[in-house]
Length: 318
Image 1 (cartoon, rainbow, N blue to C red):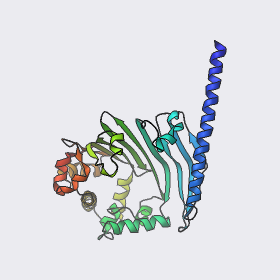
Image 2: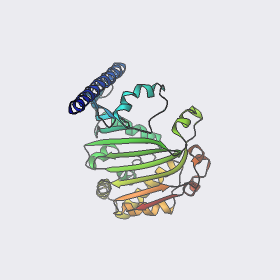
Image 3: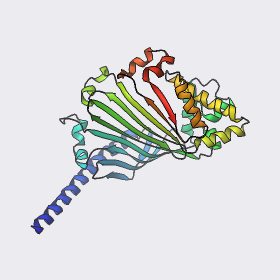
Image 4: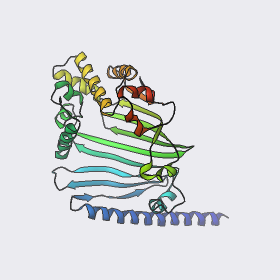
């Protein structure tokens, strides 16, 4: 009996090793094809492929040198997350829609995306997004120091950031007639955000609708935590000659602009907690709990000032 258990363990380990080698070889071949396809536009290198028994598969240490830019992009880890290693082995069937279904949960992750503050591509990206957002007062001291249109490379440097290190993990779960998205993202020494978004319906059924799919929001929670950004912004604004009252007004103006850009006029149930957050609270939680699931494509049909009540938006600073 003892020998049988030993042989079972040995054969199991051998099978796992063979499956892992096969999986890594397949992913490596796919990555080599991606590198080849990208070669007219960028040089892409990576150190290897990693997988775990828990179902995580990542490409490690990706280095991208774009031909049109001087500075490089570095990503520590990029990959997917599935319920178990067996799902990784069958991943090809899921991609080709040859499986009987899809996993009850799956995810995507990016860890350690390094963007140097003085990178030439970041400077170009900021200029493009600022113009896209209609940044008419971008040169205003208040708008500039609080990042109303995003932080310019120059402002980031003055805030004390040599680079931005971004990470994000997204998990999609399908159960009980709801599709749940859990998102965790952060920028090192700036902020952290965790969000949960629930949509009505079954994932496979909704996917089959194709372009006819209309996501219906059931519930949403966003938790934002400051990791030194607020204090840095306040100090920088003070250096530009703004007093505390002017700084708070500029921050609230930036928050209102973000809402209006997304078709929402924030009311006092959001503005007052946000002001508390800016005045010293570490975190703020924003929730949306509509009385019935609402098609997100229909929100634009309502007046921007009616959207907070429609979604039952509330916020709490803590």
